[in-house]
Amino acid sequence: MTTLSRSLILGCSLVALSACGADEIVSPGTGGNVIINNPTPTPTPTPTPTNSQVTPAGGCPTIADPQGLTDEGTITGPEGEWRVCATPERFNVSTTLVRIPGLLYRLPGQVSVGTDGGPTPDASDGLTDTNVELTIEPGVILYSSGSSFLNVTRGNSINANGTPSMPIIFTSLDNVVGFNGANSSGQWGGVVLSGRAPVTDCFEPLAAPGTIDCERKVEGAAQDNFFGGATNDDSSGSMSYVQIRYSGFVLSGDSELQSLTTGGTGTGTSLHHIQSVNSSDDGVEFFGGFVDISHLIVAGAEDDSLDTDTGVKANMNFVLSAQRDGIGDATIEADSNNGLEDQTPRQNTQIVNFTFIQRKSDDQVVRIRGGADYGLHNGVIIDETGNTPCIRIDLDETVRAANAGLDDVGPPSFNSVALDCATNFRDGSGGVTAAQAEAIFDAGTGNNKAYTNTITGGYLNGANEDGYTPIFDPTGLSSFFAVGVTYIGAVTSGDDWTQGWTCDSAAITFGNNTGACSALPVF
Image (tube, rainbow, N blue to C red; front, side, top):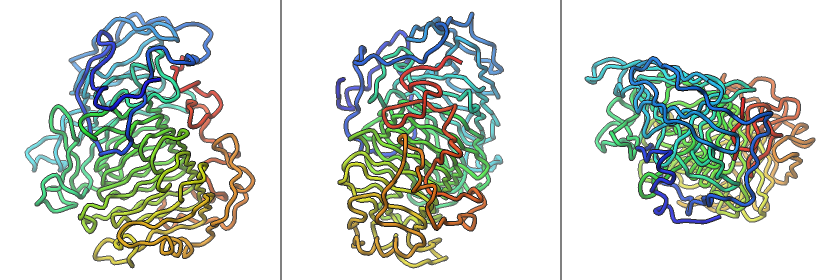
């Protein structure tokens, strides 16, 4: 295994099979070096068991988009030989990518769904919506390499809904040809959803936050792509039962994508049963807008597992995060200390029923800063290193009293949260002490600062999690949250929602549902 500086991996290997395509949305990460694998890893990844090797489809299907698919011949990997069909760089009409045995779709660069319709849903901004929907059938596998990524632009949507037995998989060229091992990452861009709900930290410094004038840029893209607006109920479509593997290619400087990035998405967007695997940056990052996501797995991210910023209003239900040994940053990074803390809308993120497993000695597991409003409820935080404090809070703006005029609901809230860390709290920046953070934690109900976890199999609740009392009722926070849950943690053995659609990695194994993440399933 070879460790290279990020600046050395911007070229494309296997040029005959891949295109060094376009580009991204990004956040500056702190993931350090990207760990990649030599062409012959040791040990060799074990392919998904199948009754027979894959045989290539006879050709590429006809799609509605007049640009069509490009038949690029075949590619061979551990599972056999596949037909490769490259998508257009822009879908200009609503299109369905159908599942055909022995066929893979390749993203040949920055692939856009539709043309950006601007910050308003009508033509008042001089742009007209193209109303393109990209539908991806269950069991479809798409791959890419380098700076290539998929961007669903404003006024357009994605319909990528797999099933519990046949997920949709976004992955890398190296995954297809069998080069990947436990620590492979950063091999392509990721999936970006760009909407027109309100954002802060505007690209134009004089724009008013939260208005149609406040947009943010999908950085590094070959053509300028923006997100943001003032349409709360905007929809970027739906994604469910989806794996996003080995993403986070470095686009420029410290800018790279995550597995899943949302920018200004609205309440009409539906996200559930998403698995991020070995992102070289954050597992997921949500910039502004509204995000309701449930049944989220972040496995082996090299920066933060869950990053939220620029005024997002996010509800997350049933969230499982686990690092690889010695790799990663914090599990949660909430907002930034950048002098724009009092712009509105203010971030307000609530996470209910979660399991966070920290495996790298670092500054903290959870970092809440930048004046963000934040709540953690019915969950367990586990530091397996014995060296990483559970909770850090930064800045007076983050801990001050509620103020409706500032869109501020007050200090972070913790209810029915169990801490299994050698050190529970640490001093933050801006004068917020460990003692203040502890007092905020103690102000909640049902919290436990001396907890011993009984997680089994690396992710499943044990007796202590399933029998925890009292349980916080989250329905007062939002109707989005599940009713009648009687346990803390993300996954109980009585409802193991990870089964069927997930893959196994060095961070978490679920029982060979679609096989190892380093191999492709054959449906």
